[in-house]
Length: 213
Image 1 (cartoon, one colour):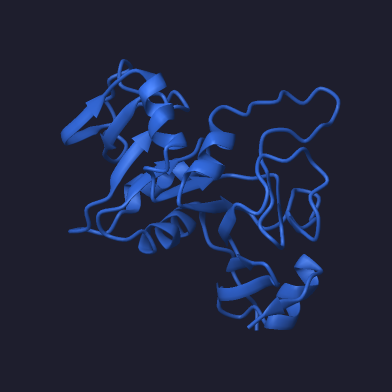
Image 2: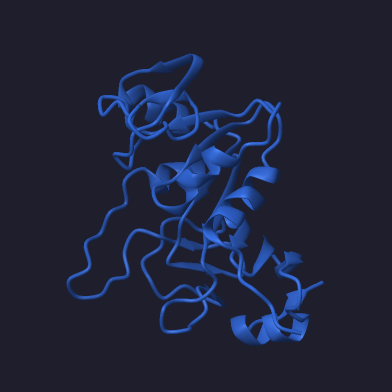
């Protein structure tokens, strides 16, 4: 049976489904920012941005952008009633102090045991951009990764051991991809779900690692 990858919006919606009511959450630059647009109705999720915002809402409608109100990726955001903005030093104190329940980050590689590499590929000409990723990866109570499973060359971004410079060691709890959702454990990868039509054996072949059911 043929399978279809999750679209960017479907992946963002899948991540949003797992964020619990009342959670304080940081959404990293790139794909994770789309999660803000898919928080289930009636669920209170307090979104934080490392440049100093608490209480972000979904992306503003076209024509309603305020470019003085942006997230860490310089994208215009909305502010929910009761939201606030403040100095980024206070924001980093919040991140480092363990006050975030979840952070959702992009990644170049994640190891089966949860090591994260997301700030540099180490390749010539690559521009390293760590931002607050190291603080978030270690400071949040749970670190989730949201990414495509395969690179443009068809290689798995989930690996036995990261070959890129590390952001954090054994910090990733879950990996959300366009083909599957996995949990990182000390024993290795554990399957949470996968797209319809993709067999367990096919998924293990794509990743080239064993996955516990």
